[in-house]
Image 1 (cartoon, rainbow, N blue to C red):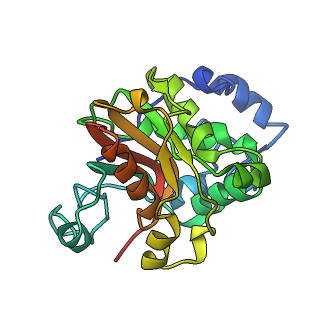
Image 2 (image 1 turned 180 degrees about the vertical axis):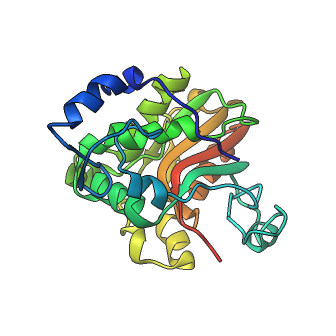
Length: 254
């Protein structure tokens, strides 16, 4: 599903390989994921140490073609039992990496501890995202309630969405969807509790931004899909033609 492509380091404000290689002889770099010092040798993923590159698990087939749920190797891609039993409101979801190891720790530091410097290295992974077959017009970051935004200081989905929008030259709408109800953090809830927690939490603020349009919802992590599914339900009820989902990471499911 995904293949690593060589990307211009200049695009992401990273020193050219020969210059960074020379500097690293005297000043070791700190890996943004694991925070260990290492000497850069110009790897394919800018800034990451070899151990973290090795630790990454890319989301690839076999998987559910609707929710992107990964399956064990040796099987074919097919609709998972959850999607067969209860078809989600979004049309298709995709993620780049599995939410595990040092990548999960980096996303947690970015999201919960305000390490905004991780926006660039995490945003680099959009270069690997497979957007083929997703004919969307507008990017919509999953919104935060204003109280959560005040607590956290920024919306991680919006930050990542801006990186993607700039890369692929797509418009971002921050006024189409609004979070109208303050909810519990999803992290400690099970699947059914997550669904109840976000039920009725979103509303379309600007119908013109949604009606008859194909939209791409952006978030950092897909766990059970309850949040993006609730967003998709509201968008579809307001006339959205299609709702796709793209997240940086996805929780693996046996």
